[in-house]
Image 1 (cartoon, rainbow, N blue to C red):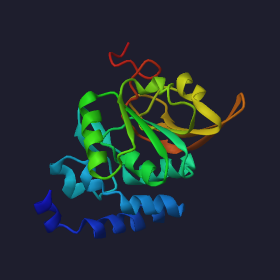
Image 2: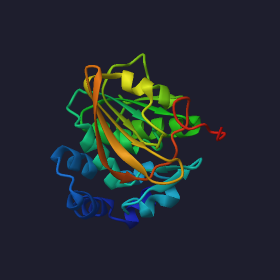
Image 3: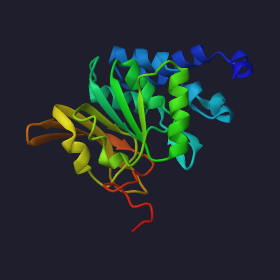
Image 4: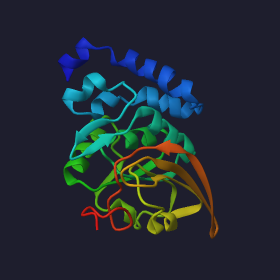
Length: 224
């Protein structure tokens, strides 16, 4: 890592990305922009992907999974409307990058990853970057984390067929659920569901493309 850092100015690349690929596309929340400027994406990708860390695109992290496009990470964080101290659940830890952005916003973060190897790597990266208070669990994220509920916001980083009932039920009153929903093999709609009592207010934030959300209330890994 040290040799790689000496050969590149990641700080400059990160600032350029935020200015020209995030803020310029409509992300206006200064707290989100500050988090995107502060969290070092190169630390959350495999070593052979570090040279691409500040391209605005998803990158492979192994096991068929990806680290999300920076603009989408910022869009979802802004849509979640996170205040310092909010309890936030992330479904789909991946490399830990999204959890780091949420934690930088001052959230208390619980994050669930289906793949044990990715969960352990993310846990190590988050600790190395100073995010010691992020709770990482290996398990089925579609079922949420009932022991830690309710949550002020839930951010789902994989595309499911609909809104998992377990996640909706784990929202606090006024809580926000951000998730991609739609076909498994094509683009989905990024939804924001705001829970108000027994009712929901649903907004479509536009088309996105995510890896499938696998689990009891998502897609069947065997396609059944």
